[in-house]
Image 1: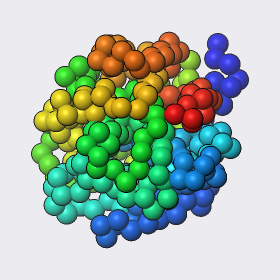
Image 2 (image 1 turned 60 degrees about the horizontal axis):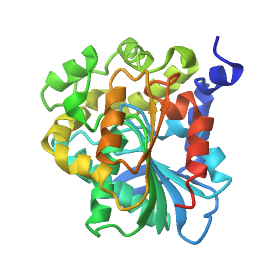
Image 3 (image 1 turned 180 degrees about the horizontal axis):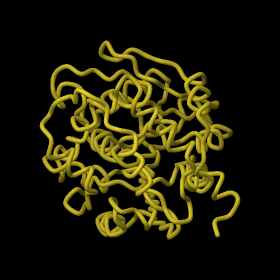
Length: 307
């Protein structure tokens, strides 16, 4: 039986979305509104935690992690363009707005706007790949801040090993276009439920909040276009594997073993390529560690704030 804490972690209420939005603010990047949630006081000048979220989700995935970490330092997370509360432009193509390179540009701009100079970088799912690009730029000397420590959570940057679910395969096979109608909520329910462990099943309110973030500004119509990041992963596979495994700063890996997409073997491969990384596996967790076990994720971050 799941514990009471486990049950509470994978729950949400519809009003949580408004609370999260009210706590954040918007900044203009490239003419578009980007939602930013920032809280806490820096451990030292310019210090903070910089977090990236996953697909098809948003920053609110981290609502139970952020307050725990913000007791110790500044915490910054934004909604990628096309996700959550941020703008969702429909013109152009995937490359026009939604390339991982451009999403990385915006994360860097958000960090600058929040005054971050040295960060613990925490990356998950699609955000793992955005983070890999940021890590690659760090080693190229192209960032305005220093990465003190990188924490890698479940994600399929190693796309050559990924197991796609049927709905994901359908979206990948679709042309780069915007749908004329929203994807029905029930299809998202199946996809989202599949990413949770047996021990941390989501309540209806959590799924409702996740779908509401997808549907904001009719964002579900963009999802086949946004899904093309998987092809971009294939095209840039070695660069982003190197980004994840050749960072000069310490690196930690935390992995939910029940993940149907980001399979456990990916974590093992990361460890093989980066032997100095500390690898931690959670057998009772699937694809959504910040939702399923936020207290563990927060503890992992806080323990690494010093570098």
